[in-house]
Length: 144
Image 1 (cartoon, one colour):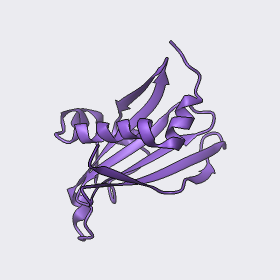
Image 2 (cartoon, helix red, strand yellow):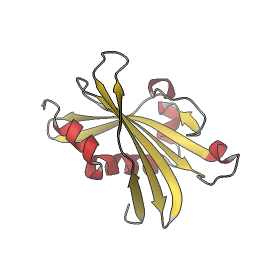
Image 3 (cartoon, rainbow, N blue to C red):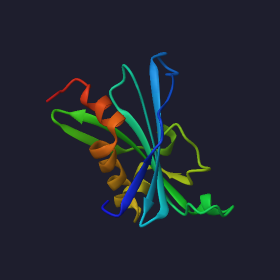
């Protein structure tokens, strides 16, 4: 992601729908060579052990039809021993629906999609540079 720049918006805190603990929502805008390229959302809550991440890649122009030219990948990030792990999940598990982020792929679609590496690159960024994500994951119990 040498040519990518990430805009780190301030976290938004709410209450987790399932347990009432503090929930964190992060919005990250990604530009590549100065052009809008992707957006990712990361969500996690105190007392839970994983980060839900949805990465949307595609046309981020202000054109009214731009959302139809975006593809979103739903993922989970967690810690296993001393390593971060990532896994693609079905759209229904993302907590989001098709719309602003574009079409959210199910796991099997995502695994076969030509842009899947872009999504994995964004998840790599999250565990390498996104301080709130790193701090959350680093505070999880270490198995293995």
